[in-house]
Image (tube, rainbow, N blue to C red; front, side, top):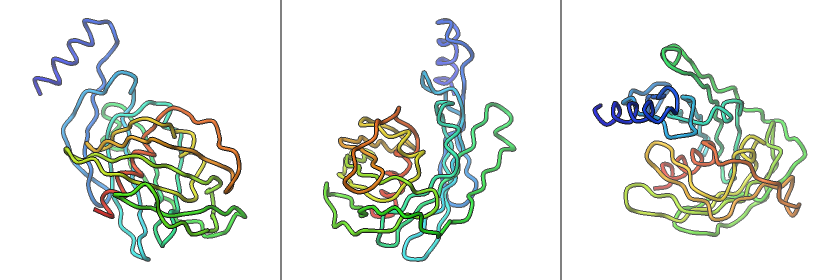
Length: 223
């Protein structure tokens, strides 16, 4: 608490505006409780992200709360399909102050309708390659993701690779570099989105919460 207060006082002295604090936590289900922490520079909103992960036909739900850039708040529902029966759907809501106490997040049901796109898909930890399988993209999954890098939890960095069908919002926040969710750091060494397999890669936007969240989910499922 003293460290948070000191950070806010420092922000005021440097005339950087009001010091935003957000609750930071993660958990299973639709709620979690954590400590209030000051947000880093540039992160001007609090976010609540709820994800439904399907693995071999079994659904699990998780929640993450933390600081984000307000530009990431309009991501909308996000769908990812990594093949081999693994899919995720995420919804994000942003809030500030007391509004976060009453903000609720609902994940819409999966849209199983094929949209005509196909992507190579696979995922792995402790590797920078995986055995690709072609999959049909559905619903809002209009882009192919190809990302490799490392996930660090504690002091143990692990290689990872993620490929598959994703929503445009993932590509809007994808960038080579680092992101952190719930104390787990993800550093992407390669990251690209294409309209379909073999197409030219898109221009990438600023690093965001969604790619880091995908890496965190991969870590929890496979470690």
